[in-house]
Amino acid sequence: MTATPVIDVHAHILTEEMMRLMRNEAPEIGPRLSEVDAEGGVLKVADIVQRPFPRGGWDLDKRLADLDFAGIDLQVLSNCPQTFLYEQDPALTAALSAVQNEAIADLVRKHPDRFLGIGTVALQDPKRAADELGRAVSKLGLGGIQIGSHVEGKNLDDPALEPVWSTAAELDAFILVHPQKTAAGDRTKDFYLKNLIGNPLETTIAAASLVFSGVLERYPNLKICFVHGGGFMPFQTGRMIHGWKERPECRKFIKESPEVSIRRLYFDTLTHYGPALRYLTDTFGSDHILLGSDYPFDMGTLECARQVREAGLAETDRDAILGGTAAGFFGVSGTVDAKAKAIA
Image 1 (cartoon, rainbow, N blue to C red):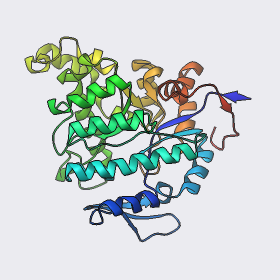
Image 2: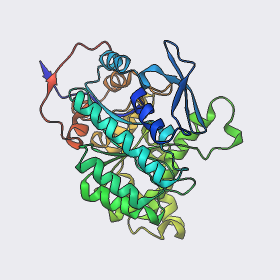
Image 3: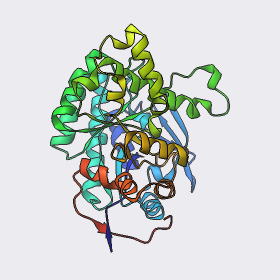
Image 4: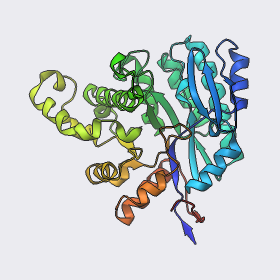
């Protein structure tokens, strides 16, 4: 029996070899693991500490076993957000990005039946970023890049980023936008709200800045995916439309209703809630919803494919979300042998 491959577009990796190569470039930045046990460890990158950093983040055997358990055929590897390093010297970030991109491309070459890949760039230097995007796609064979939700406080509508958008449009590259260094303040320090609310807030600000700045009117075919179900943006589309009608600042750079640009965006499935997933699908179309696990982090899930299957969607919608649309983006042709799924 064959089936369209199940493709997870939102997953992060930082192998021990990647860490070693990055330390060779920048010993003072790391990354380094400590307090390692069977479940994971503590990751330190420059001044950023990730606790816990689950073992699947660096252990390929663990990752592959988890993919089999989750019923995921292909996983799109991207860097861990802790290694964006936009606060560092641009030349150093560019060198560390290149190291990670080459390592991800090597993993894809060694495991073409399990992995696809996207790169990372020094977004604080848009010219370098655009050049590395070109190299990642044209020379390394990666499908695009992952970028952070802002560049040290500058939103993604910063005019300096124009070379990145124009290059991505020219290459038909996939762009995954991931929250980092959230805007949420001291009021979110308790109850893990910095993540629970802060991450979706970051995603919403990033998406809104692209919509209202006109980036998506200038480049209507950009393939930009916002993780965690697009944050609050998909669920506040009506408010964005109303603001455009009523407020002149919302019309300054766009001629069309913001709904037009919002519908050009893509969102992953990581809502952890069937009704929210159904809303995304019903409102924006299954061809704009992509499977995402956020592997290996604690706010991700290995049940992402099962959640899609149990969301009460039509079969054609379910197939598009599980991998049909992503297969088109990443040039995956044909079918794969359907495995027995531990979660089905």
